[in-house]
Length: 487
Image (cartoon, rainbow, N blue to C red; front, side, top):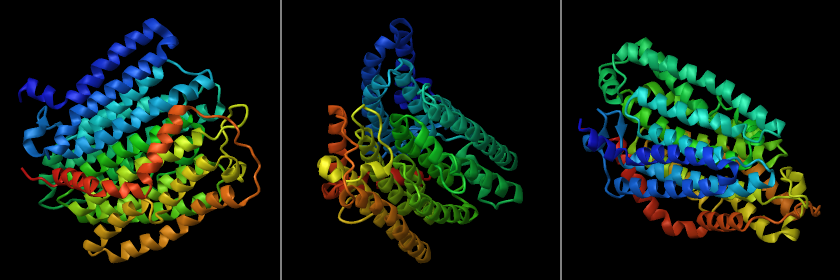
């Protein structure tokens, strides 16, 4: 394999690595005073990486021509689609983080570097063509995420969330490693293509356990039930910009990795993992919906909402078809926009002292005191519930459509029925904002950058989003095709 060609195919990762090291030197020399400059430069680096990754998506890159370093890395259309979402999410995180940490007098120059290196690991995850590359990318992303969760050192909740995330994340990594070792032991290779070929002749009991343990380890990363226990505590305790990053970039990378492993490594034996995915899907939908009903903290509610939405996304994976994979990517892109709108709206919920307002009961009468903010938050809730004509409905529709086309009508029917439960707690937030007596708790003024991001993301999930549905569907088809390309 030509090294120069491999480096060219991994250009986004190379750029982030070099830029991260340079910015690390700037942080060492400039200290925390240079944090704003480093954040701006980090956003520029992410934008440049998106430009480098985009041609692979437009050009429908796939197959051996985009395999780098002996098949360890795939710079195909699927990886490009996921990376664009990851880089956009990381950029939003950096934009909202500066003012958030400045108010808490906790901004440090290391934060944008952590986001950059986490993005590097996530890019490696969605491009992985080998179990070793998978694990290196996963750990690079996870180690940075553990630190970010506990970044607000003056807040006990942040320290607690970081510790819980670290302990449970380490357990999940151990489960994943055990599954990888079993898979290697019974197939004789760590290459996804090699595993696929080895399993095509049949699945032994040991290999079946390997598949199950790998899926269990990845289920933790996407916060799918029954491996969801860390999500509410981490979402609530972590600083809100970090929670935004977890709900968007981390979700995209983990689901992208799960799709690549399922279709490329275990694709020759779909029946070995489809039942596991169906179980996790339905359980996530139910646990997410029922768990959110009794929540009074908006961030914990969003955590259970993420579990619920992962369940819907996994319906696409359960089909085992290209249409299902494309539907997953469409849903994922829409979910990123909804999460950005939701958490930026949460950032704008501040009292007169500038402190974060997170209790849902404190949002009573928000429509009378802050009508535009209430409208944006209501749009997020309706969209997450999948209520037409908001764009969140389209994500659920394409996933259920893929399930019906794959003759999984019962699964689609159960998913639709369970989505009704989820609508209850979303509507509860809207009811509190529009029909309860105003408590006038949200009085603080937000940042202009936050307001602009909220406006743009709210427009994206509004009925105007359907204008881009055809383009989004086409790009998702390009990306999905790369996972099913043979040769």
